[in-house]
Image (cartoon, rainbow, N blue to C red; front, top):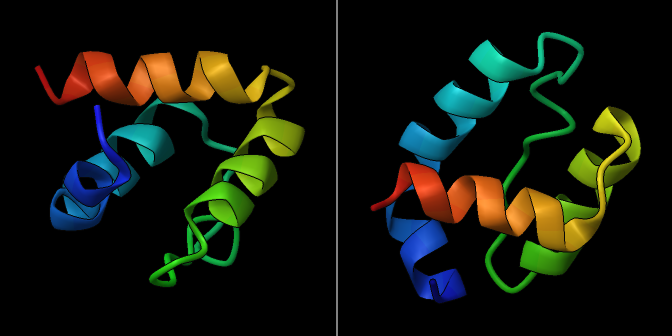
Length: 63
């Protein structure tokens, strides 16, 4: 899934991430255009998964 899809669906993604990973904060999930990799990196560090695992999880929610 493209990062453009993340941008358009960020509120849905953010809600699912917060439901799934209660440790994530609003700051962790702050989306900034052009900073997708930075956001994914923050999420990855906080939940202990690889960046690819985070992307795969998000992609599964967007199907």
